[in-house]
Length: 282
Image (cartoon, rainbow, N blue to C red; front, side, top):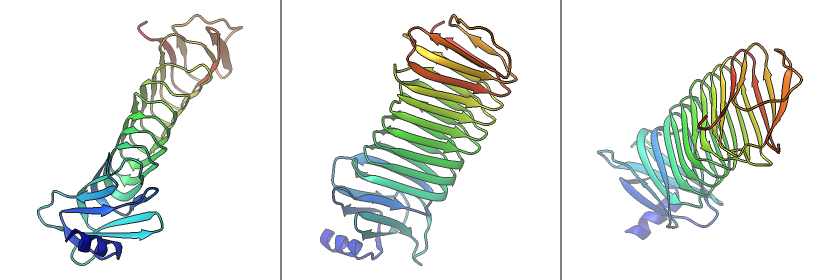
């Protein structure tokens, strides 16, 4: 029965089931596009892809392969894309590309490349070691344990990143950005109308930029702190727990100073909000 099912899947024939296995090869990546509902993806140690649902009735799964690209479609009886809650288990090394208009997504335990896009819906990321690109127009992004290069973007909601390293680029139009308990070699956090809140440790050769047009910026640093800092606060105020030696500061001009021995480079820029540089536990 399994051999017949796999043969049908390889030919792109819809298979009616609540739980479907599909064998994959090293280097394959999975594509799920124009999907609506919710999808949860978890990495596991088998070279098989498992698609299942808790729906009352069996769904039509259709897999099609083109080289290393495997595309999954979830169809109704008339072969139209349908909205559903979908649970996927894929090899941890496998690349993933998921998109949809109204789609909540959760992805965990992968080392392969991950790309996620939606118009509405929240995104949850956990324990990912490969490159990550995630964007939502009207949804939040919550991430923990990112260890590669990550680019996260939202339009009207917040982004929270916890316990992550690697290289982080985080951007929102009107949402708040929070990066906490993180040690990354590069962080670029930018929002137009929201606040930026960072807590963590700076690496000696790291590069960090925290920007907000109309919101506040709060940076709380773990010891030891060795950084070359530039502050731009055009119409706001700047507060620091660290002693600063400078020749003066006027609104609209940059303030440059060194904490400790220097090394890490950090830019704090706000047009119409306060900028605060805090010492952890201070």
